[in-house]
Length: 583
Ligand SMILES: Cc1ncc(C[n+]2csc(CCOP(=O)(O)OP(=O)(O)O)c2C)c(N)n1
Ligand SMILES: [Mg+2]
Image (tube, rainbow, N blue to C red):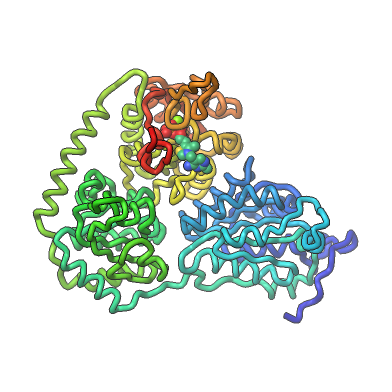
């Protein structure tokens, strides 16, 4: 590169006092800023404490968390919501490992994120001489990240950040690790020379136009369908081509199912939404177009009884069209007859220009059969929701949440738990794109408070979090963070005294592994930090608490007392639980 040898800063060369000299700290900040990355989700300590201070002084928004995992989840969902990599900043070894879970989560969920961790001195780490927080972080991050880089010299910070950004957002997005050893930060460089090493990334996520023959093959197949179905995945939500997707759905008249984070791409109340007839449409459909949705466990791998197969490995006989940015996705589980590889926006636009010359709506029998199922299921659900048992159950509590979300369609909905997750997904309608964020591909517990913080900061909207009491515990300490930054987050802890339910008994006389302290008051946790705590034992109390939280925009935690016998083991996925089969 022909730049000066990096030097270590000394007192005499204090970068703050000599305007012509810059240092590694400043270059990291400049590189992020140059690329519009202005929010850092992190937790200070050696060697990045000054980086957090100086980033804040330089105008970046630095959100300081109580645990790196939560900062990491925040960064990951910020990436999903903004299409820019969310930045998580941690200290070395233990801080890095705490952030790593979120990095892996970002990669698995295809969220763009960069985990930046300080690390110890390379020479000592490589000779394993026992440095402070010694760990070969790059090697550990690699298998869990889409890409991983280390920067040793200040002159390479610009390239390192640029490569991290491109890797995170191009093609199928994912988590990227950027290793910054302690020594890097204090290295100084001539400011003018340093400035020239920075890179503003041009077109970080280039469009990928699908091949015309692939588009034609897909539409030819879709035209043959008697019972077509479209499945929208979170990739379709990520793409931010909401009106095009709506035009495709409405232009073809094909019924659709949204995966959980694609809910609201079109309002869940849309007449073509088949969610209320899911168990009917999956086995019945003959041609299924997947848009940004993978045939993983969440869709029963595209086979088995869910799809009308005789046993759990049998194909149901559907033909699949798969629209995905990754050419490797097709045939992952079952045969895909028409793969369409490209970015979702370009693919949907290509479909739209082909169908504008005319498209025959699906056969009326298919549509009316679905409608019949929907009507019956919706009526059955309405009956259940109208009940007012004491203590509350998931339905009577979520009936309130459903009303409040309907009245506040711009609010962000965060959701985790088992029963608390499954019931919310099916009961609470979502009306706008990217409003529902949840446990994602892994069904991971712990995303809750990190997601709430990022959602509030990124969207500035009210956030409503529906949390199982177990799920909440994974990130509960971040209520202090919520209070510190004064974020408009209303957490509802669906408190059924345990994991799945609170009624398990240990026959040997100990405590069952799934139960918690009875009648715990999670609302007091919020009060401890100056937020609003509410204990709600009835739907009316819950409603009042939620309405007040939304009106005041104060951090609020409502302890919703739910019948401890109300849940089922593992919620809807009991069948995946090996011990449950034995029972
Ligand atoms: C990181 C992580 N650890 C453990 C689990 C296993 N797990 C699935 S759901 C769940 C908690 C369910 O209890 P709760 O959040 O109270 O929801 P409920 O069913 O009681 O409404 C747990 C521990 C997981 N999914 N992720
Ligand atoms: Mg629970």
